[in-house]
Structures are given as structure tokens and as C-alpha cells.
Image (cartoon, rainbow, N blue to C red; front, side):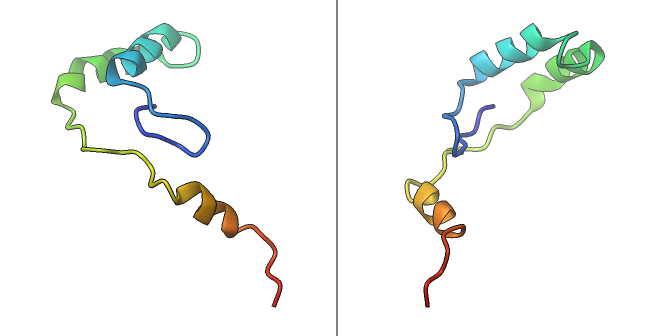
Length: 68
């Protein structure tokens, strides 16, 4: 949730944690959510996790038919 994907932008950490809490007991196991939240302050966040600007174009090029 906190890294940019081809189909959506990254969420801020605070919004991702709020989403995890919101989904506890429905989409996510509440015991796992509690364990994650307990160790969350110890999780090391890498620097910039966004995709390169050229990613979408180069990714889509992999699926274009080749004309030789």
C-alpha cells in the first residue's frame, strides 16, 4: 500500500495503517493485524519506493506485438 504501483499511487504510511485497522476482522485477520501493529514501530521503511517515470511505457512495451 505504501509503494507506487502501475495502477495506483502510494498511500502515506498513516493512511495505510488506518486501512489495515479498518479491514481488521473483515479482509484481514484481527490477530495478525494486532501482531503487525505491535511490531510496526520496528519496521524499517526504505527510501523512495516510487516507480520510475519510464516504467509504464517500458512495461507495456513487453506486451506489444513485435513486427520484424
